[in-house]
Length: 529
Image 1 (cartoon, one colour):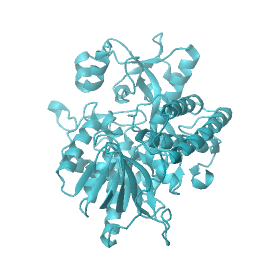
Image 2: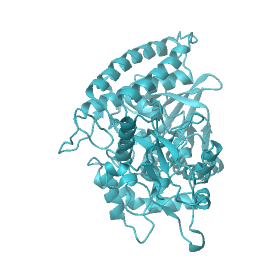
Image 3: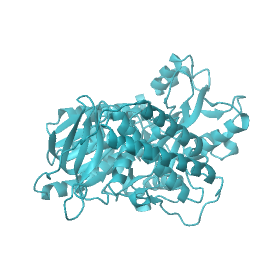
Image 4: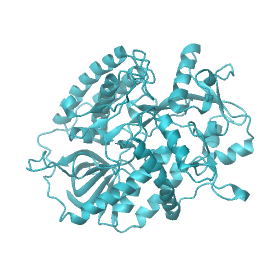
């Protein structure tokens, strides 16, 4: 089925929904999302949004904290621009209906503090900020007559003019999309396509991300010839709940901002041995400190102790975390919380300019899928939703100019299934999925070596060939498409990690423990594959 829209947005997190709302001023918008419209990394974001709103804070301090965390790879002009623009984007969110936590009788917004921040500047909705932002944006999207949301729809690949044999400048013309419920491939044609597909946490065995985070946008852009940058910088959140009855449950950094302390199984504080900021050091340092402590003691986890706070305070400030832990028999006011590091956020991604444009005409990328230069080698906590809001706004302004000058939705070639048959052995998909995640966890995790990366590369290349053959011989399914993207993005991460022969930010290798004088981006594109 052929579907035509002025704008096409892939993803329904804060970046995708904000983009859709802003692009709807210029014409029709289709939002394509893999699961339900509320299933996104945004919906799981607990901490909040970093933004200067206090007289005690300043743009200069926020910029400096971001640059320090980014370990020399941030683009300073991008950082300064995004930080300065953040308050206006926050005002728009509030106007949309987002209800941030306030300070009760004192009035004003309640500001949290997280690792790497020199001041309290985290706007939050208790410990469910992402859910609150998603709620308000979805309500606005559902009211808008120019926006249509397609759920349970998995993007297969970008449609480019070169792919369908059209002469002239190569540009993105739309996307082939699998309707998972109808088991049919639809062809979406659009003047402009926006990747807002989130990250790739499911490349790893342990992650705070939902199951949808399979790196789809990075993989599709790479296959279309767009360069991908700095994918070696995978942020491992230091504190994912460690419990046999739960998975992927994040224990927000905001707990450490309120004084929670990391301790080992003997109750001893250990983070201060690795950094004077101790439990409030940036995430890469804290994650490595936990990893080192677990290796030193042989323990399966460490603990986050906030028992010095009252139960009343913790129930009020962290209702979601308190209730979830309590359901597992852990009262966080009386017992330390068992935690382990887990893959959380990709700081690299599809190369874009400060307005979200890629090197492929007609294609933009916003949110976690994009590499703007804001995060550098390590994302400062709660700068991700800030980036999504600012980049969605900037790209919509740029796209508005494009849409106003584009005469019509481009014509495209519809999907051709050819002689592909039904899949014969789905165990191949499930087995390869598990193997990729184990490889990445064992060989491309918090601490790396040349030998581990070489092992990962060899095995991933075998898997990529197997998956490629399977893809072309059988009809596509949602699971197969995610596996195809997961394998490719894992390979890209390995290629990026191999090329960075230093330790910087989130990339730490025992073979090159020092940091080079000059910081450079790591670029990988289709010619490397």
